[in-house]
Picture (cartoon, rainbow, N blue to C red):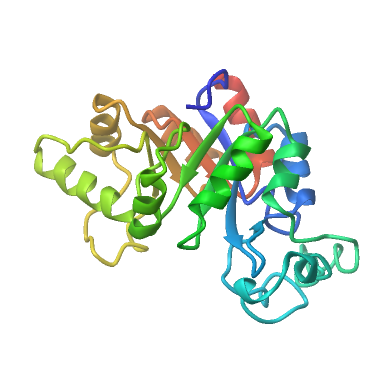
Amino acid sequence: MFDGLSRPLLMAHRGASRYAPENTLEAFDLAMRVGAQVLEMDVRLTRDREVVVIHDATVARTTNGTGPVASLSAAELLRLDAGHNFEANGETLFRDGGCIVPRLEDVLKAFPNAGFNIEIKDRGMAREVLDVLHRIGPQNVVLAAADDDVMAELVTFEPSCPLSLCRGEVKGFLVDAYRGRSLQRFRGRALQIPVRHHRFAWSLLPVATRRVIDAAHAAGIEVHLWTVNDPKEASDWIARGVDGIFTDDPSALHEVFASRW
């Protein structure tokens, strides 16, 4: 997993999304310039079955358009302004600046030296994602899917790249870890979890703890935390043994990570 990249991994959450529109070439470029090793992104499928990089099921939050991604063609998405709604320090610096909703293929080609953490958001698109990866051939990819059904579909294609654990697997892992039971065997090799538990309605347990980290490592599974933007907090988690951290602000955390490399 992410062969050749130093640990801990500095992972840019949707790119340097604090300072540039998320999931755009601009955000990914900025992240790489300030030292990120892995670009995290979300992918969905257009009406004409192109794999595009966007988080939401609709385009309204991040562009000047409306409607579901699945109802638009790749060409229609390309005409939208992906920087229209982005603000930093009260300024809309990227509006009308040429930001687009990129295709996955374009992102992979633009950053050949990056690692990629790609979360598949839609059901029924695993084949298209794997076709893009096969065609472009990036060296370092981890495929993620929170949705259990999306992950189950992905596994049927037997991808050659590593996978993360999906939501149901994370739940089972945490319960087993806290009960001290023998851990289940998972196809996934990355436990990608939030620092705190409030996003998981099914659990009153804390999510990221030393017990969980140690249990994952004993099972040969890396632990990647999301989302940490404070250097002190990042340093504390690295000291506890996490293997990677997703951040909106890789520039703020770079010094902490570089001192460990």
